[in-house]
Amino acid sequence: MPARRTARLSAAVGVPLLAAVAAAAVYLGTASAGDDAAAAREPSGVEASATASSTPVASAEPSPTAEPAPAWTPAPYAVDYPLYGSTEMVRFIESAIVAERAYFDIGWWTMGTTGRKAVNDAVREIVIQNPYALIDSAQVYVGPSGQATQLTPGYQYDLSTRVERREETLRAVTTALESLELDGLSKVAKVEAIHDYVARAATYDWDAAARIDAGEDAPESQEAYGILVTGTAVCGGYADAFNAIARAAGLDTVVVTGKVDRDGDTIRHAWNMVRIKGAWRVVDVTWDDLDVEPVPHDYLLLAQDDPLLDSRTADKTWMVDSRIADYAG
Image 1 (cartoon, rainbow, N blue to C red):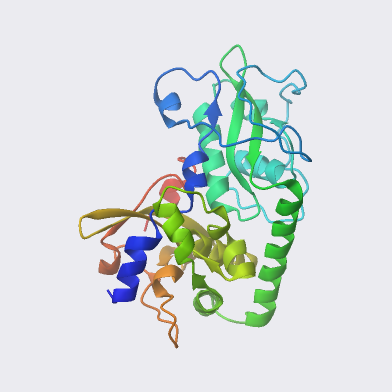
Image 2: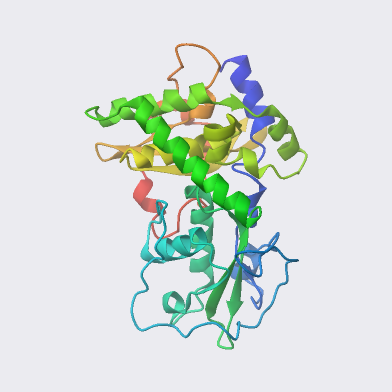
């Protein structure tokens, strides 16, 4: 591995996508000890409304304004941004977050069960996969029966900043597609063009990497916005940017998180997979961005069993458990 890439691995990706990914596990106010409680994390903050920030307050009581669970499958909220969710429940929660709902009912999805793990999985997937869902935590209200009934997103930034970041990210994705002129190209050629576009647009954010290694947050460097608007990010931003453009181009792609073992150290990392001719192939723009021309393609569309990938292992936080097996091989 080139020295520059080795240095990037050791210094840059101490957290796979940002501290927010680890914090994205749902906080369950009345969770009992066990698997659900062990998986939960305290939220870093929630908003009392979609227009004003407030001090986070955790509550185990369901909101008195929560609507009863409907008797039909709720449709996603109407939004002007793409929804990436792998299931109907994920898309519904995702749409409510992008629509800036201060809180919303999830009772339909959890009827007959506590639903806590399913909601936790859904929030993790949304944080990792959707560049327009700007949250870093979520708070679930649990009813007397133990059923998860309502979700309150813990939004990043203030409302005006979130709106601006979404608009600018989508505008940058549109500009990228116009510049790339992908119409008529094969899927492989589209992936190559987007890979090279992201690598050329990006400068690796070494300052953010140092902050992450020191245990600080650097959310702006873990988003597609970082690469496509400000021009710098760490691995999560590279993967997010590739995902945003590739999905807009009609490709079947996801962000993957996991770890890389190197010289006795375990480093957390983020990359992409793209479905080509029925097989999920690995794309890692971060490791191909060596600031040289032509852009290296060492980590472009690799089979998952390629020896170059022997040191990395995907985790299971980037997709809901019921769908994770769909991306094998």
